[in-house]
Amino acid sequence: MTGINADRRWSESMPAAYEQYLVPVVFRPFAEDLTARATTLHPRRVLELAAGTGVLTSRLLAAAPSAEVTATDLNEAMVALGSTRAPGAVWRQADAQRLPFPDGGFDLVICQFGVMFFPDHIEAFTEIHRVLAPGGRFLFNTWAPLETHAFEVALQAGLERAFPVNPPQFFPTVPHGYADPAVVTADLTAAGFTIEEEQELTLQGRAASTADLATGYLTGTPVCMAVEERGNGPAVRATVIEEMTARLGPGPVAAPMTAYVFRAAAHP
Image 1 (cartoon, rainbow, N blue to C red):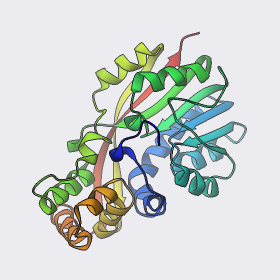
Image 2 (cartoon, rainbow, N blue to C red; image 1 turned 45 degrees about the vertical axis):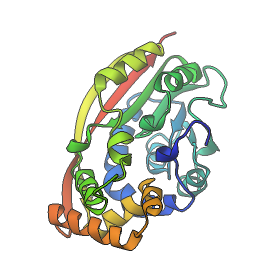
Image 3 (spheres, helix red, strand yellow; image 1 turned 120 degrees about the horizontal axis):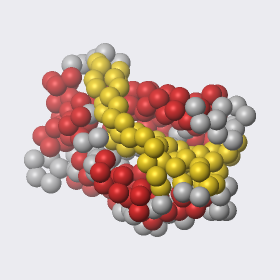
C-alpha cells in the first residue's frame, strides 16, 4: 500500500460488501455511460485502472469483444474478486503511479472513480501518458462536490450525527476531494495531455433499501475502518440508517449523483 494513507486504504473484507450493496446503485449507471464513450473510440488495447470488482471491466468486455483488456487495482482483494466477476480480462495488482507496463502499450486507459485516490495526480497522469501510444486516449470520471450526491450527503449527515466530534471525513475529502474541473484539467495538461472533452453528468441511483445502502457504505468503503477505530459500530449503523431514512425514505429510493467525465489525448 505504498503511498496510500489510511483514508484511501481498502481491507480484504470490503470488496464483497462494495459489490453487493454499492455497485448496482452507485457505480453501474456510470459504468454503462463510460463504456458507451469508450466503444466510440474503437480501442484495441485497453488498460483499466482502479478496476475494483469489475463493474466497468465486464461491460467493456461485452461491448468491445475484440479488445484486449487489462484490468488493474492497487488492492489485491479487489483484484481477486474482480477476476472472478470479469474473467475475460487480464487482471494485475498495480499502482497507477508505477505502472508495470512498457511505454506506448495501450491505445486507451480508462478509470472509473479512481483518480481521486491517486496521492499525486500529475505523477499518475504522467505515468498514464507514458503507457499510452501516441494519440491514445485517457477516459475517466471523478465525483463532483459532495452536495451533488444525495446518497452521500445523507450518509455524511448520519456519520456527523453519530460522531458529533471528529466524524469520519472520507467522503468529503477523498471521493469528493478532486471535484474542481479546472484543477483536473491543469493536472492533465501538466502531464502532457490535450483535453478533448469535459462534461458534467448527473445520473440517478436507485436503491431497494436505504438500510442496505447504509450497510454498503459502512462495510464496503474505508469508512468501515474509521468507524471501527471510534467504536460502538452497531449503534453507529443504527444512527446512520435512521438519518439516511429520514432524508431519503426507507426505500425503494432514487437520488441524483453528479460526476465529471474527461477524455484526454496523449501528445505524440
